[in-house]
Image (cartoon, rainbow, N blue to C red; front, side, top):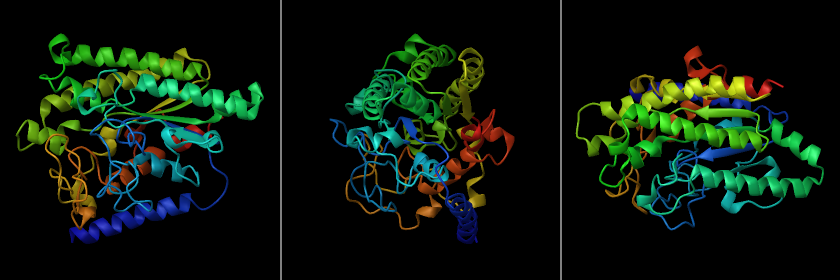
Length: 357
């Protein structure tokens, strides 16, 4: 029965996805993606890091195989791109060429955070500050290609800028007290304030580069990941982690209001990932909520290279110790694009954001 429920639900979702892809021009001229492993599409592949997903069993359900996406299939932003009518997946900055940058670039990096030091115990990553520097390089290239400063600026103003970051600042920083000092320096409330202040400056920098339409993804229930459940053995989600993450989400929601008031012509929306992923998993046929689908390496929580994943991936909430399965990504992306209930997004969803001139 659970299997049939999952199949029926996914059929409904995919039918909606297919109808949204029914033709017509893209809803935005370009899409720029910033973030961490939840939306990375290959920027970590050539970095000196253990945070990589360019090997099997990652990509087992993705048409291009293992590309550096930290899941079995598509990421949230792959699906959002499809819903926006963008024909090809947005390329990672590491693989861009002059011909494709005007349609968008993905700068996301596994392990990256708002803070520069976040995730560095895993090796190199491209922090949000460095992602912004990479975007500055892209802007220079776009202006060289278009050769008309006004036209280039107009293009950048019309693009969608999606940012999904912050989880590592908790899981790969604050809640690793043996490796990072942030938890001894700040209370959870103070740390959320510190993160939001820095994030506000980073988003303002992006605005100054020409961004006007921002989709900011909040953090999901990080305390419910298999990694945190193993780190703090419990039969339920780790309360301290989830409470800290929710402090960040609450402040991010207020930041959206502040930036919308403070920055002329800016349109920021908050996507409530916590709510998007709060649906009872059993209702969509997901039965395994606290274990990864693949065999993971204990030190990283990522899938072991070449090992076979679980055969029925539709049943799994998580693919490895951190990252959702494609099933969850489909649910999250479709509700972020077109909210199911008002609490999914604020003050509107991605569909209405890109329609707004």
